[in-house]
Image (cartoon, rainbow, N blue to C red):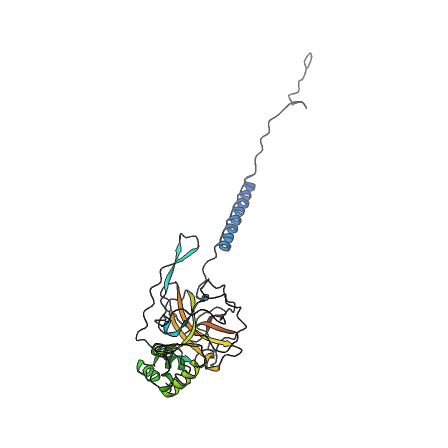
Length: 343
């Protein structure tokens, strides 16, 4: 135009503008998904670490937690009331929900009164039945013993698990009466021994009480076998007669997820020079839990053999219905120690 001038409205290179950055909607959703995934991974990592620090309790587990010697004592001084009966157990409780377990006080073991006889039997090999209850693999490592009046126990030597007891033998044990026990202790071979020791031995340490079919043997035959076995044991003389010496052994057992499932706590000796009569398996207690998690402590008496050698006592926990071993712990016995208790 004449005399006119066209002015450009465009922005020059030196002008400043404020630009707004906007994330597209589809990228926003992707960011949220990535953030949620990272948070979930972090939570899973924390839970995994928690399980490692505080592992959940094992289920359906029967174990021997510890075995240690309390003292060397004559048989008359062994306070083994309830041998052959059910072992008193107490429920294990969770303290504060942080994985620390406590145990309620254990009831007092009943006094040794008229009870079902508990008898030691020669092992009877039987085919291994099909398991009906899951059971852990036996362990052969002895735990560190708790301090006790006796000297430090030597390291256990290699041991072989004793055979399982047949159902016929287990049934035969329960049929033994107090009259039968009295008949055994009244036999001539048992008269040199103090009556309390003789009765206890007849209840829990008889080598051949029943045959392979579960039938009781004649009391005369059992008394001869028992007297021969006791002749292999160190003894002391009391006003009442010979009193065999042995070791009082404490055994702590723990049951999880096995309420009303009966187990048997047994013991046997092994070593280079153990007489055949003492290689038999001896029933100490029947163990039956009543809650999801139970524990208890059993005391058993094992003989101190005259022959100088290295001996183990093998403590075994097995299922009563099929004889399968749940746990097995060997403990080496000392050569000697001070005698405590007895008359």
